[in-house]
Image (cartoon, rainbow, N blue to C red; front, side, top):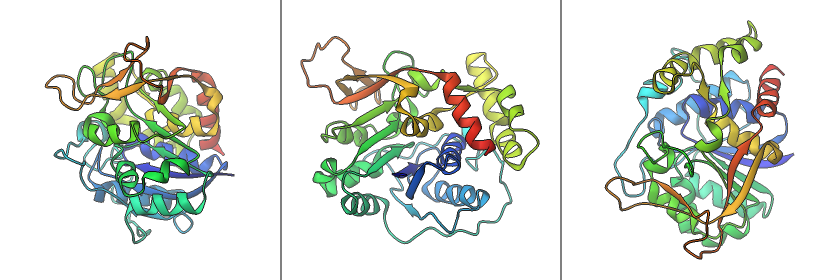
Length: 309
């Protein structure tokens, strides 16, 4: 059982990533840490607890609150995509039974990684604020993490919040810069270049059947599918965060190349852009395993198989 810590800003696709992580049965989920992003820290934490209650594992997995705002920037939520509640209204009115565990997410990450040196994979599906704070507190953390897999960035295509920036990177680019340059030996970028190729559609949802899980996925993604159609002309929605979880389950789902990647933090037009040096123009040592291709069919076989389990 691979030990993981999930770091989430629980909106629609983060929730599906949590569900995949739990239902796969292949992870020892040490804990889930929350961060502001798609929604406020409070709402992200509530949503995470709701999802664990829905999966009937609330008693087993600690949830620890983290950063309530980016390192330097004002809050920037994504209610237009995820709805005011962050889950597309799917669990609206459902009581929350699980309570978050006392503590601060960056401290939780440091303590557990050091206690299990070389064993824990960090899967980050929100802005990288918590990990940046953990690195600032404990720079040697980088030597004790097995791998960091983060959903964020785009290196060949267009952004999803500006013409060049992906949302998680745009929200806290200063945090991303800390993480990119911290010296993690295994740092994997799962960006829009691949997440836009794993598109959940109505046929996939029908495959889940008339079950509580099928109904949850149907409700939570309903508006998400409409908005993706309005923007992209395809009636589907990208499985951004579930793909990051799936890469931890099976790295062979993606093809990667180790390249030098940096992030823009001082541009009027390009803040949050992940700049990937494909031709080694900058003569810098490669620092990130960049996902450049994905087997979408294999992803959905694993994703839907887990949700139906």
